[in-house]
Amino acid sequence: QVRLVESGGGLVQAGGSLRLSCAASGATFSLYGVGWFRQAPGKERELVAAISWSGTRTNFADSVKGRFSISRDNAKNTVYLQMNSLKSEDTAVYYCARGSGPYTAVDTALSVAAWGQGTQVTVSS
Image (cartoon, rainbow, N blue to C red; front, side):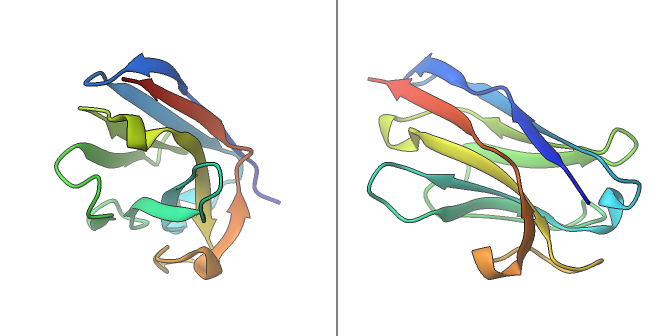
C-alpha cells in the first residue's frame, strides 16, 4: 500500500514562490507516473502538472505553464512541484497523486490510484 505525504505548502505573497514535495513509501514508486492536482473552494479538482515515471515527460495546465515546474528524484521516492510567480488564483489545496499502473501517465483523476492528504497553498494579493 503506497503512502504519499505532501509538504511545503503555506502562505505566500503574490509573486512569490513555493516548492511542494511529495514523499512516497514503496519500492516501486519510481515505476509510476505522478501528478499534482489542486482544488479550490467550490471548484473541481484539477490536474496542475504531471511527470512520467522516468521523469522525461511532463505536462502542465495552461494556467501554470511557464510558472510551475515538476521534477522527481526516484532515489528519494520524492516528486517536487516548484511554483513561481504565484497568483491569488493559485490558492488551493494541492494533492499529490500516483498513477494506477506502472509506466502509465497521470492525466485525469480517473488515472489515479493513490492520493496524498493534501497541503494548503494560500497566495495573498
